[in-house]
Image (cartoon, rainbow, N blue to C red; front, side, top):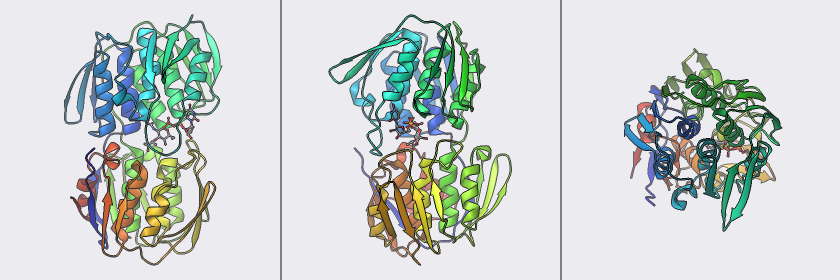
Length: 418
Ligand code: EPZ
């Protein structure tokens, strides 16, 4: 695995503008959904990141013909031949789990090994098995892999045990082209769910309620070929807004999904950032963004997003006063704490809560990315630190960011990939 290092020279006040890439967490389920279309799907603004590359390999492994040119991907799923995946790909990331619903919907059966993904908690898939079981899918376990078979389909009311993003997506993917009707309660309300349903409806599906906790699907028999543009990535946008906060600078984000950032905007305002918000661009002035925030709790959408937690921890570590961060979604999402402490941050973790007391300045040193968003948080910390910071294992960061070095340079950072 290529474990290259990013070198940041701290201290620059950022001032610049950058375009926001397509959303990783929208592109992955939409790619899975292309399996339901017996023809061609063209995706525009598809982010050029390693998770998308892995998903492409999985789709090709079951018979998709895929061509890619920059951010445009063409997926031909006319002839799907297999119902299982090469383990070297399925085991490396969590997002492969949405292939269960899509391939079951297309082929009626699937065998997949336990999906891997970040180290932020054990990431089981019991909610996925539960909801698909309620929808009539029969499961059996065969040496570390799951064999699933579509059971007799009938109209049903089903209920998710937790508003899991991936499990909601799997239920939608399984039902969309099933020819049966389902009312799914307890759904996740994330924007990426809305995006998936918008994609499917544009290709002829009949889905209502996306973005609410009750989604009704009248499964159709055929979905049509489609060309679709992936929405911008709200977490990448949040990352670059915090780059402006960390350096007390001025950043403008173009092609930003502002409708989906209200939870983030609210906390940025509490920290003292000035925001000018339009429909698809936002300007942040971080000159006075040095206030601590008494209490931030991560919640399912539309609450404060867990994916922004580590990055706000970095920003609050140089604010005035103490802040409490509570992580309620993942049970192990404080891995970045030890690395931030190497830079001089004052952070105490007790269970699911972290108390962050701001220090005047962080100091540059060598730190290690251990997962995607913690890696981004270390980069942000390096932008504000005294001296040079070296972030090792940027392979984790490239899972979700097309080219964070290019983007931060556009904002005025002194940063290089070594
Ligand atoms: C999606 O993961 C995102 N990934 C995550 O983004 C995001 O953090 C998460 O949703 C929450 O918003 C993609 O969309 C590819 P969940 P997902 O199912 O679907 C537990 C990033 O940085 N759980 O809503 O896996 C789970 O362990 C990534 O871009 C079960 O216990 O999230 C977690 O604690 C990180 N059993 C909680 O539920 C299950 O069967 C929420 O997980 C499934 C999940």
